[in-house]
Length: 158
Image 1 (tube, rainbow, N blue to C red):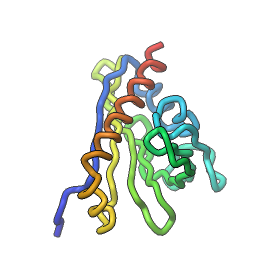
Image 2: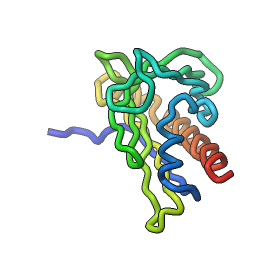
Image 3: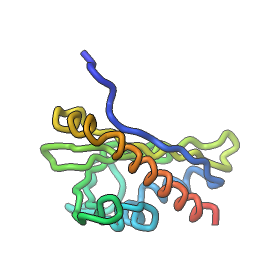
Image 4: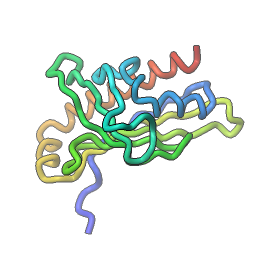
């Protein structure tokens, strides 16, 4: 029985770039520092070298762009080239949230709509957090996703 819908949000933006180029950018976690207002660097970890389901990486985060600063362990959970790239944030035993990109190519192949999204795990502590701070954090995440996508668009269209 499903009690509540997953907690999260998403932002979409169209770019004048073919889906293959967009895929190469969103699935290269080592470039996220160029675009994200919170995650200023990332690196593949545990022997992982690129995007595939089960690959691990760590993101170096400056929460809300001001701190605290910490490393977040991540694991790729969905990797469908030129369609979906998603990863979980948390430990091997507990996922806190999930982030991802969905790509939709234009019919003629000249452009792509990128949707960045996040989804919190529906645990009781997460639900309580979302109840208390969700509206504020949701707005922060949506603003950050919009900034990330606009920065990606600038690179892809240059």
